[in-house]
Length: 322
Image 1 (tube, one colour):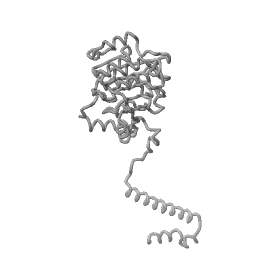
Image 2 (cartoon, helix red, strand yellow):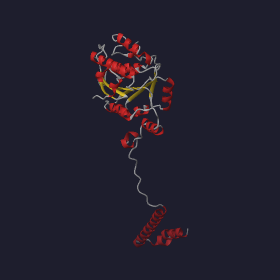
Image 3 (cartoon, helix red, strand yellow):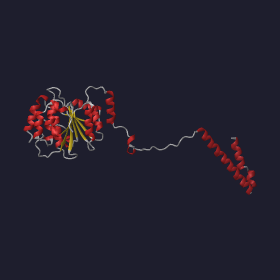
C-alpha cells in the first residue's frame, strides 16, 4: 500500500500539474515509462520463478483412426485371440502339425484378396485360420450345434454354422455308389446344393453360403474315427461341388483334406476331388486344386483317375507330388 501511495503522489500531485511546461510533461512521461517497465519486469520475473520452462506441446500426429499409420493400428481381435489361445493351450494334444498348417497358410497366401475361406470343423486351429485370413471372409461349419453356438459366444468375430449329418462312416461305399447313379441328376458335379436332394450334398446351410465363390476349402470335420461317426464323405463331396460351381472370382479353388491317411478321406478325396487335381499330399494332408467346370459336366474325374483311385492303397498317399 505504501508503494502504491507514492506512485499516486508522483503521477497526480497538484504541484506537478500546476507547473506545466514541456520539461515537466517530458519528466512525467519518462517517470511513467520507468514505472510501467518496473512493474512488467517484476511480473515476468515472478512467473519465471514459479513456473519452470517446459518444452512446447505438439499436437497429436493422428487425430482419427483413419489417419493412423498401419504400424500404430491396434491388433485385430482375431489376432489377439489367437495369440492368447496358443499361449494358454500350447500343450494341447490334438492339434495339426506345423507342415500341415503351412499347407493351409500357403494356400491362403496365394489367394486373391479378399479371400473366401470355408472350413469344415471347429478345431484347435479355428482362431488361427480366422487370423490367417485377415480381411477375408472365413466361415466355419461344425457338426455340434451347441459347440458352434458356444464358440461364437466366446469369439464373436467367428462366423460358425452347424450341420446335422445323417451319414455314417461305415456307409461310405453305398453312398459313393448312390452318387455315381445320380451324377446326372441330384448329385451333379456342378449345381446349387441348396436345392439338391443328393445324399452326400449338404443343403441346410444358410442360403448366402451357397452364393459365395469359395477360394480355399479346408475339410477337417466332421468326426470319422469310428464306424458310426458321420465321416467326411458329405463335406468332401460338397467341397468338390462348390469348387466346380463357382460363378465368379478366381477360376481355381484349393481344397485341402486333413487326416488324408484314413480310408474315408483318401477314397472320397480321390473320388470327388480327383487324383488328377492333387498337387501335394502328406500322411495327414491331401491338397487339391479344382477348376471351375462347365454346368453340363457330369463326371467328377477322368476314367484314368477312377481306376487309379480304386487300386490305390494307403501307402501311396504318403508321397508328395508337385
